[in-house]
Image 1 (cartoon, rainbow, N blue to C red):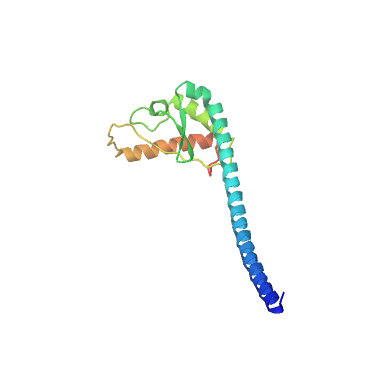
Image 2: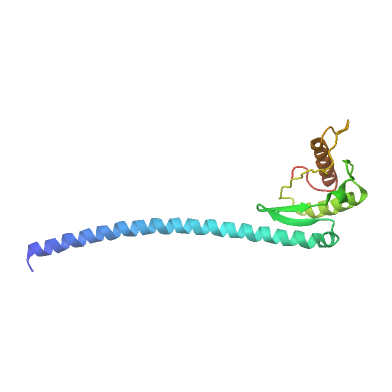
Length: 163
């Protein structure tokens, strides 16, 4: 084999080594990106498993209230939602919690207080009877007063006020 031919093969081998080195670096970057994505997905999976465990725990704790028609539990937009029928909580046009509503909310508070790391949101609603009294000029004021009544009872029953 001639020196020229050997030098050409050597140059070709160097180019191939360079090409393979570039390819290896690219594959290494791809691998690292895939590894980060896999870690991210594993974190999401852990969070989903934790939420599912909490959901199952809450369902178990609320089973008797659910069976009695005093509340229902659902998942809406990734959030656990506890729905209490209006007639369980308030009389029409009133923001005063009824006896049954107080009892149910105390049981709800007992369950929610077991999850101090979670945040809770209370929404007030009204019936579909328009209201226009001195205390409640509109259904908006009534629904706000109802939400406040629920929040007060929950916090008095052990749910952290900043939860």
